[in-house]
Image (cartoon, rainbow, N blue to C red; front, side, top):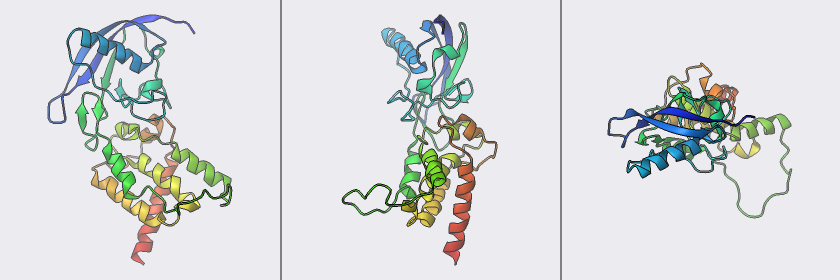
Length: 254
């Protein structure tokens, strides 16, 4: 693949905190390598700002390996940028051309208030997990491998649901800022396994109640969440969660 350098115009959302008014500010970056990651390009920009005595742009990151889900950026109108099934940290500058203008914003959701610039508070996801995303198991020695027979299809579907990294791209992509894909992945992950059976009914009721409490919107059924999810989480999990919720609701009324 041919390597090349480019000059770019960046329009980046700057906001001091959740109470302050934000605005898009323009920056010029030059001689950016096509082999840089998007976050490395931001590192270069921040070095320029620091040298000039300006406040660097605040953005979230940790592993930079597409694992942690911290690198939440809305790039040219798409969560995590133009590549599919990809996180911002794994997006490379070869996705852009010399002279491009790139608009970078934070996730837009009432449930994800801005902390500063491109960093949003996603602790709402943590509270949803705390509401029911756990299993009751006896502590002690590890049980023997394969002591619980699990259907291969169920195991595979549970593993796929568990691959959700909780980045919030589904919320950012949804016109209603729905968290249904995230919550359904966490519900499905445990509902498909025998280890999740003890809390199966209370789990879905409590997690959905907490999701609503956090002011996430309703599912829009446009499948934008699946399209922008960096791990390709299927909307089939939403249908599964709806069935789990209906069943749990009927059981609680019996």
